[in-house]
Amino acid sequence: MPLPRLGSRPVALRTAGVLLLAFALALGGTLLALSLVGGRPARAARSVTIEVSPSRCGRGWTRPASGVQTFDLHNASDGAAEVYLEDPGSQLVYGAVEGIGPGTTRQLTVRLGKGTYAFKCVPDDADAVTGPSVRVTSGRRGPGAAPVTEHDLIPPALAYQKWVGGGLDELVRLTGKLGRDIDRGDLTGARSAWLPAHLQYERLGAAYDAFGDADEQIDGTDAGLPAGVADRGFTGFHRVEYGLWHGQSAGRLRAPAAALVKAVNRLRAGWSRTRMDPAQLGLRAHEILENTVQFELTGRTDYGSGSNLATARANLEGTREVLSRLRPLLVGRYSDLPGLDRDLDHAQDLLDGFRQGGRRPAPAALPRAGRERVDSVFGDLVERLASVATLCDPRRTA
Image 1 (cartoon, rainbow, N blue to C red):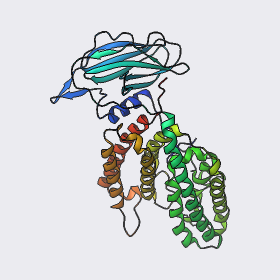
Image 2 (image 1 turned 120 degrees about the horizontal axis):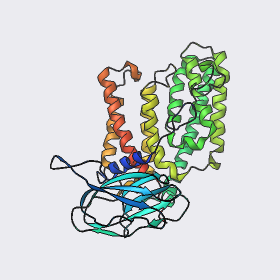
Image 3 (image 1 turned 30 degrees about the horizontal axis):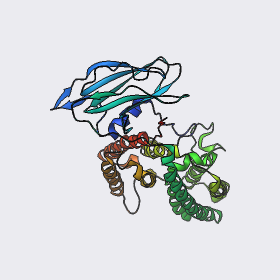
Image 4 (image 1 turned 45 degrees about the vertical axis):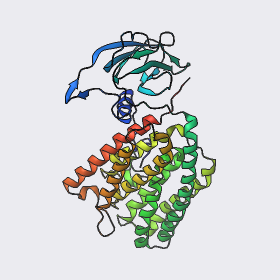
């Protein structure tokens, strides 16, 4: 259940602090709040105040030095801005802070090495401005990240959108079988058909925003509904799940199942006219597992089938699909991409290890040690994927 929606799914909060942390992880430790040298914390030099404004961008850095450096980025303009610390020649980025409001100050802590640096100020409603260049004459410089533009993200977004179209074809087929089983009163067959259809929808997680209102109709929960599971607004897969596993008759389930089939078919029919926002692709890769942790691993979306771990497994597959399209952009930008791949494999193997007789237990049925392992592995993955979201966040270069 990867995408936020009002009343049932959270909006991912991407504050400047979160982005800064993600960028630190993405660059393999280039950005640091505290750096370890020889086993001891490295003390940052006294903070330097840097002006953020169209006319005096980057002013205030007069004594550059290698090592850990903290900058107080003060926005002296009357609008919000984002700031990058970059190599003005290659435009490789070594630090980034977004959402600095007018009159406010945000900190950026970096480890600097030999090379040339400059601050780039990017106001919300004006052209980007690059400040004066500053040269550090010693020390080892860590890896920088080349900025990603919206143009860079168009090919992977188009490739992903085409893949989603094929996934919707399969969703139509599987949901149709579910509907036919219920229509003829075969509730045993319907319980068997429900999970494959629902998991197919869950694999399409990065497209949920483009689905619009259809997502609520297809995979909504009862969160925020006055009558809860009895509310007429409770529709889709989870409404059918609740009925199938709470003894409701085929007669009571025919209308919800027919509405689900209709919503799925309508979504598929209109998909060729839908356009995904390329700028959101990296963020969606992060949100898929962020919401998996919040909703699936806690069992909050279990309406009787006990299938949350299977859903988490499908969300992993969906995350891989997004990353496979973004991989050409991440190679050379994300220094720990192999580590992310290992963590995805580890999470998949962990969930597969819980299978018993072809099914996985509900999260609450796992032993404490098992729940802690799942939480730890998925928590690490969400942290790594925050770096993907940050590195694939399109940056203005002008």
